[in-house]
Length: 330
Ligand code: TYM
Image (cartoon, rainbow, N blue to C red; front, side, top):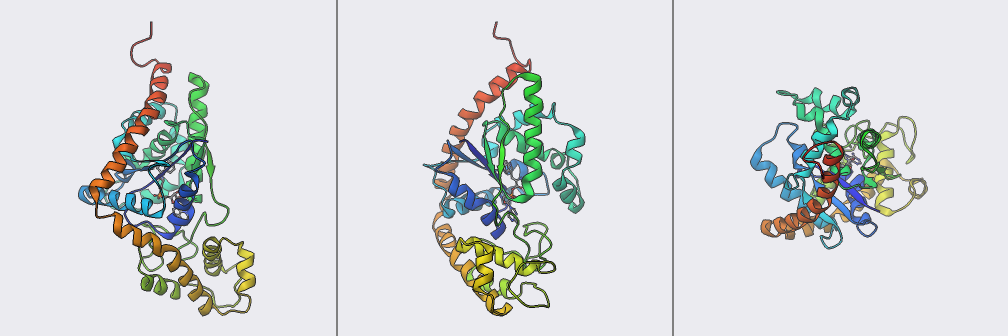
């Protein structure tokens, strides 16, 4: 099973990224043939960015992934801009992508309304590049959180349209969205997803947060004025905490509800804070060992890029040729 996923080099990955995606990447390494993980710096330039920060954030994200358990001997880990096939395939696919479909993308609507200076054409094109990322490898499975569902549906549609016109060259991938933890919510606003750009600082738990910061964030998490550690209407805050703890403990949410049936909100929040701290501590510790050696990180990324380019160039050659680009074989 060929697995592919991408993650933005925001540097500060949060608990939602970790639970919704990174833990799935780690799990996929031994199922993947291979499992391919890409840090998408080209996607990052679709909104305002600082060049020096982008490069440094890319190392941060690489180190977080390695610290979380990605092993370059068991997966392919690389930087998107190192593999030129992604941008080339993006253009090829744009010829079979409907403008109307791109206009319907929720993420474009959300992000474009937040841009203060420029809503770039790159932001509009973002899902086409994302489709190219996956389709260049004929990946079958795409581990992501819930917010990427629509983008994976679009890449299926693009692959279908391409194949109808040019022959069976691309593979329609399936998303892999976890049953629990696919949409971790902001602790201060449990009706919005936890997010680096849209969320509140106090409501976002970062993978690299110190235990004291984690505790403070959970202690001030917004809940409701009622009581009872149960999920339900008007209890989004508590439901989010139940979900977080159930992922960390590897239990069903109902088991968490039973365990804390007679607990108050304060005790429950402390339990979730403590479990989260313990859960993230090994990642933070390994990160501080890995991050300083940028040369070693570069070596991992360039070895990954070499393997990735080898796979992607095969698909690109077939796609170009079927589309009538370049010289003919006769
Ligand atoms: P990014 O970097 O924003 O997010 C990385 C992964 O984290 C998931 N995620 C969440 N999961 C649960 N709860 C949350 N609150 C939460 N917030 C984010 C995302 O669903 C994602 O899986 N467009 C992608 C990057 C990308 C990509 C790809 C993904 C580029 N090319 C190809 C898959 C395949 C993104 O914005 O990731």
